[in-house]
Length: 113
Image (cartoon, rainbow, N blue to C red; front, side, top):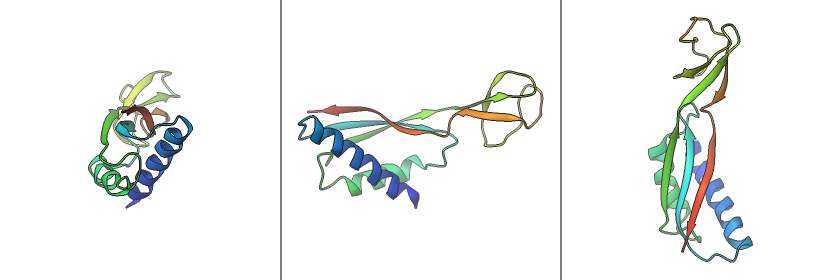
């Protein structure tokens, strides 16, 4: 389950930021996860709770914001929605779509308190 490693990375990132800013408690962590990122949000929630227990993020709420997939079709020159990696362009049906958004995972916001 790679979500455990991802959750550990999020906690490390949040702890580093908290330490640099003199923060002793994190209330909420907001994460954006792309629909095409192959991250299971439920598993990430479970793992975050487990790995944050002995950190400044202990008891913090993890809020996940879904980011839809999109890409640039090299054939028809349009930005189009994507529901799968390497999927066909919904406009022209060809498979020359370069993903531009939807595979990311980033910490968007941290609420302290």
